[in-house]
Image (cartoon, rainbow, N blue to C red; front, side):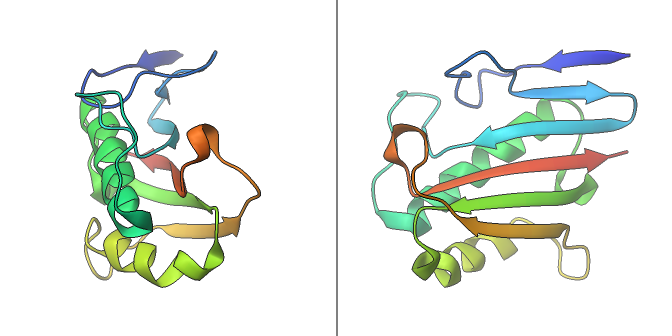
Length: 126
């Protein structure tokens, strides 16, 4: 059984996909980009500021489904430039409890939607 998850507290999907899909006890959060859901604009300020907004968006989707960062088991981080890894990592660790970090992959990509610097997807389990 699957359920589509949607919240106004994260940016609307910009294509034919859902913000998240709940399948049984697993939540699959689509890649979130640094769009402020209140304005619809990409946040400025570089990779660090964008990572902060991306993770706020991920958390909003998790919360809409009744999940929290404690339930996240895997994330994938997509970076426009791997040189921003340290900045993004600094922000990222603030959204998870030490000792309860999810598994993760980080990859550099040629281009992301709206030419953003960071995109993050997540899988959570209850």
